[in-house]
Amino acid sequence: MSRKILLVDDDSIFTDLVVNSSDLYSDTFVIDIAGNGIEALTKMKNSDYSIVFTDLQMPRMDGFTLFEHIKKTFPDIPIIIVTGTGKSKTESIMIKKGATGYLQKPVNLKTMIKMIMTLLKKETEGGRLHDASLEMFTQLIEMEQKTCTIRIDNKINDKRGIL
Image (cartoon, rainbow, N blue to C red; front, side, top):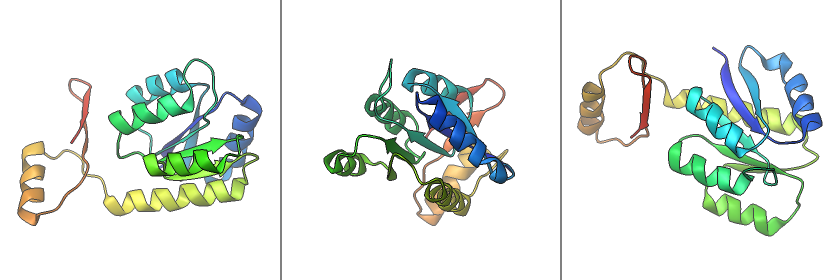
Protein backbone atom coordinates (compact mmCIF):
# COMPACT_ATOMS: atom_id res chain seq x y z
CA MET A 1 0.00 0.00 0.00
CA SER A 2 1.43 3.34 -1.06
CA ARG A 3 1.23 6.09 1.55
CA LYS A 4 1.12 9.81 0.93
CA ILE A 5 3.76 12.36 1.87
CA LEU A 6 3.01 16.09 1.65
CA LEU A 7 5.85 18.40 0.59
CA VAL A 8 5.01 22.05 1.19
CA ASP A 9 7.36 24.44 -0.60
CA ASP A 10 6.99 27.30 -3.06
CA ASP A 11 10.22 26.35 -4.88
CA SER A 12 8.95 24.31 -7.85
CA ILE A 13 12.48 23.32 -8.93
CA PHE A 14 13.07 21.72 -5.53
CA THR A 15 9.65 20.01 -5.38
CA ASP A 16 10.01 18.64 -8.93
CA LEU A 17 13.44 17.25 -8.05
CA VAL A 18 12.10 15.51 -4.94
CA VAL A 19 9.08 14.06 -6.78
CA ASN A 20 11.23 12.78 -9.66
CA SER A 21 13.81 11.31 -7.25
CA SER A 22 11.15 9.46 -5.30
CA ASP A 23 9.64 7.66 -8.32
CA LEU A 24 11.67 4.54 -7.47
CA TYR A 25 9.71 4.28 -4.21
CA SER A 26 6.20 4.69 -5.68
CA ASP A 27 5.16 1.27 -4.39
CA THR A 28 5.85 2.51 -0.83
CA PHE A 29 4.95 6.21 -0.97
CA VAL A 30 3.93 9.06 -3.26
CA ILE A 31 4.72 12.71 -2.77
CA ASP A 32 2.01 15.33 -3.08
CA ILE A 33 2.94 19.02 -3.45
CA ALA A 34 1.49 22.19 -1.91
CA GLY A 35 2.93 25.62 -2.71
CA ASN A 36 2.01 27.24 0.62
CA GLY A 37 0.42 26.57 3.99
CA ILE A 38 -3.14 27.36 2.93
CA GLU A 39 -2.96 24.91 0.04
CA ALA A 40 -1.40 22.31 2.36
CA LEU A 41 -4.21 22.57 4.94
CA THR A 42 -6.82 22.24 2.19
CA LYS A 43 -5.12 19.08 0.93
CA MET A 44 -4.83 17.69 4.46
CA LYS A 45 -8.58 18.09 5.00
CA ASN A 46 -9.28 15.99 1.91
CA SER A 47 -6.58 13.33 2.09
CA ASP A 48 -4.57 11.32 4.63
CA TYR A 49 -0.85 12.02 4.85
CA SER A 50 1.72 10.00 6.76
CA ILE A 51 4.40 12.73 6.86
CA VAL A 52 4.60 16.46 6.11
CA PHE A 53 7.77 18.21 4.95
CA THR A 54 7.50 21.99 5.02
CA ASP A 55 9.61 24.99 4.15
CA LEU A 56 9.42 27.89 6.60
CA GLN A 57 9.41 30.88 4.24
CA MET A 58 6.47 30.77 1.83
CA PRO A 59 3.82 33.20 0.58
CA ARG A 60 0.24 33.36 1.91
CA MET A 61 0.91 31.14 4.97
CA ASP A 62 4.45 30.47 6.15
CA GLY A 63 5.77 27.21 7.54
CA PHE A 64 5.69 28.40 11.15
CA THR A 65 1.94 29.03 10.98
CA LEU A 66 1.36 25.81 9.05
CA PHE A 67 3.35 23.90 11.68
CA GLU A 68 1.11 25.24 14.47
CA HIS A 69 -2.07 24.31 12.54
CA ILE A 70 -0.85 20.78 11.86
CA LYS A 71 0.25 20.20 15.46
CA LYS A 72 -3.19 21.31 16.65
CA THR A 73 -5.34 19.55 14.03
CA PHE A 74 -3.24 16.48 13.11
CA PRO A 75 -1.01 15.89 16.17
CA ASP A 76 -0.01 12.38 15.09
CA ILE A 77 1.52 13.39 11.74
CA PRO A 78 5.32 13.86 11.83
CA ILE A 79 6.50 17.24 10.51
CA ILE A 80 9.97 17.73 9.07
CA ILE A 81 11.22 21.26 8.49
CA VAL A 82 13.06 21.79 5.19
CA THR A 83 14.59 25.24 4.90
CA GLY A 84 17.34 27.28 3.32
CA THR A 85 17.70 29.54 6.34
CA GLY A 86 20.58 27.89 8.16
CA LYS A 87 19.96 29.22 11.64
CA SER A 88 20.67 26.62 14.30
CA LYS A 89 18.48 28.58 16.74
CA THR A 90 15.48 28.04 14.42
CA GLU A 91 16.24 24.32 14.30
CA SER A 92 16.38 23.98 18.08
CA ILE A 93 13.15 25.98 18.51
CA MET A 94 11.25 23.88 15.96
CA ILE A 95 12.52 20.61 17.46
CA LYS A 96 11.44 21.79 20.92
CA LYS A 97 7.99 22.65 19.52
CA GLY A 98 7.63 19.10 18.24
CA ALA A 99 9.16 18.93 14.76
CA THR A 100 10.29 15.39 13.99
CA GLY A 101 13.29 16.53 11.99
CA TYR A 102 15.06 19.41 10.29
CA LEU A 103 16.72 19.32 6.85
CA GLN A 104 18.92 22.10 5.51
CA LYS A 105 18.71 23.06 1.82
CA PRO A 106 20.23 21.96 -0.44
CA VAL A 107 18.71 18.70 0.78
CA ASN A 108 20.57 15.42 0.46
CA LEU A 109 17.84 13.37 -1.22
CA LYS A 110 19.22 10.07 0.11
CA THR A 111 18.91 11.44 3.65
CA MET A 112 15.35 12.59 2.94
CA ILE A 113 14.33 9.19 1.52
CA LYS A 114 15.93 7.40 4.48
CA MET A 115 14.00 9.66 6.86
CA ILE A 116 10.74 8.89 5.02
CA MET A 117 11.34 5.14 5.11
CA THR A 118 12.19 5.23 8.84
CA LEU A 119 9.04 7.21 9.68
CA LEU A 120 6.82 5.00 7.52
CA LYS A 121 8.20 1.91 9.23
CA LYS A 122 7.44 3.48 12.60
CA GLU A 123 3.89 4.30 11.44
CA THR A 124 3.36 0.69 10.41
CA GLU A 125 4.47 -0.51 13.83
CA GLY A 126 1.51 1.41 15.26
CA GLY A 127 -0.89 -0.28 12.87
CA ARG A 128 -4.22 0.60 11.33
CA LEU A 129 -7.67 -0.72 12.16
CA HIS A 130 -10.51 -0.57 9.67
CA ASP A 131 -14.25 -1.10 10.13
CA ALA A 132 -14.16 -1.31 13.94
CA SER A 133 -16.59 0.48 16.21
CA LEU A 134 -15.11 3.31 18.20
CA GLU A 135 -16.78 2.02 21.35
CA MET A 136 -15.17 -1.40 21.01
CA PHE A 137 -11.76 0.08 20.36
CA THR A 138 -11.83 2.51 23.31
CA GLN A 139 -12.92 -0.33 25.62
CA LEU A 140 -9.99 -2.41 24.42
CA ILE A 141 -7.55 0.46 25.04
CA GLU A 142 -9.01 0.95 28.53
CA MET A 143 -8.79 -2.76 29.40
CA GLU A 144 -5.18 -2.94 28.21
CA GLN A 145 -4.38 0.35 30.02
CA LYS A 146 -2.68 1.73 26.92
CA THR A 147 -2.59 5.16 25.35
CA CYS A 148 -2.68 6.08 21.69
CA THR A 149 -3.70 8.67 19.15
CA ILE A 150 -6.68 7.63 17.08
CA ARG A 151 -7.48 9.25 13.73
CA ILE A 152 -11.12 8.57 12.83
CA ASP A 153 -12.58 8.77 9.33
CA ASN A 154 -16.33 8.24 8.95
CA LYS A 155 -16.86 7.24 5.32
CA ILE A 156 -20.64 7.57 5.59
CA ASN A 157 -20.86 11.28 6.48
CA ASP A 158 -17.27 12.21 5.50
CA LYS A 159 -16.45 13.53 8.99
CA ARG A 160 -13.04 13.17 10.62
CA GLY A 161 -11.68 13.48 14.11
CA ILE A 162 -8.74 12.74 16.37
CA LEU A 163 -8.75 11.29 19.88
